[in-house]
Amino acid sequence: MRNTIKWSSVALAVALGNSLIATQAVAQEEGFVEGASATLSSRTMYFNRDFRDNVGQSKREETATGFALHFQSGYTEGPVGLGADVLALAGIKLDSGRGRAGTGLLPVDNDGSVPNEYSEIRGAVKANFGGDTVLRYGYHLPENPVIAYEDSRLLPNHYFGYSITNTSIDGLLLEAGRMTDRGEMAYSSQREGAFVADEDQKVDYLGGTYEFNDNLSASLYTSKAEDLWKRHFAGITHTAELGNGLNLTTDLAHYHTSDDSPVGEEFGNKATSLAFTLGAGFHDFTVAYQRMGGDSGFEYADNAIYVANSVQVIDFNAKDERSWQARYDYNFEGMGIPGLSFMTRYVRGSNIDTDWEGANSDTRWERDTDIRYTVQSGALEGLDLVWRNATVRQDAVFGGDIDENRLIASYTWTLL
Image (tube, rainbow, N blue to C red; front, side, top):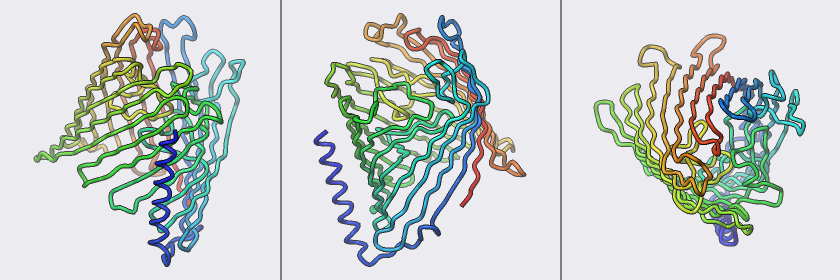
């Protein structure tokens, strides 16, 4: 942790120093109110997960509606602009029951029941130095390979802490921070309790992304989860124009995780994935390969797993696992139906270290289908409708066979 804190402090000092020097006589163009924005998002979800031959709970099935109000102020005028943000979240039960709870849409009480509604409100203060450096304290919705919030259910999880971002160099985003708490809005990650599990645990991170041009970008990040692991990430994305409307996108991602647990838990892992996507007009064809190495599988929290074969249900992240993916996407605008899209994929994993994992089979697979339609005009313009289906066949130690369906309707109102 000492090295991580040291580098975070250096990055903070350098960024603040450069910004203050460059902005002694610079005023912010927007005001606290004039630059403000506010949106209200609604999401209604039906979630059904059938565990097939599970001898315990046979299925999880719930329906709920969630609302997320995002208010983001502008900045006061002057060399250092000040602002504040507010995030208000609320979930409402539409259908649930003791024998069907646990989908992640609604929190579950100790007796297995779920509340009729739940809510939370969080805030943050921020300071802008010269328009390219932002210092923030309060709630965060981070999105990077080493710490990323989860938003696959009804309402987003979120973190609390402080961070700094800098964009003073064209094409380069630099960020560093420390998160000290995680807000769980009903849905806990697959690794519940493994990361920022209590108020005393913290995660430090430092890194950035550089866009060399429109076709090439690279990311480097490092992080430390206190008493758990140290993690480094490197990724590169390149798109080659092949002519005749064809393009090939290559995405390479690599994690190196070293164990930092004082209680004998093992987190050492190397995870690598390589994906190729051929774009041909309204069609996309993807193939991907993913490999796990090291002394354990890839442990993570929330959505911080930026590898190709982390899909709807499985991440294919067991010890020594190898996995292949084949995927096809189609945009129905090519048939005169704008707003309608289709995706299907198949991922198969093998070579799992069953001695370490405790599984009977060293293979598993998942097949997903996703159909989305966004209303293009009329009174319902902007309404987003999604059907997601997944079929999983795997050993019981990984959760057993699963058939899953999600129906999602989302809409966002712009208030400011």
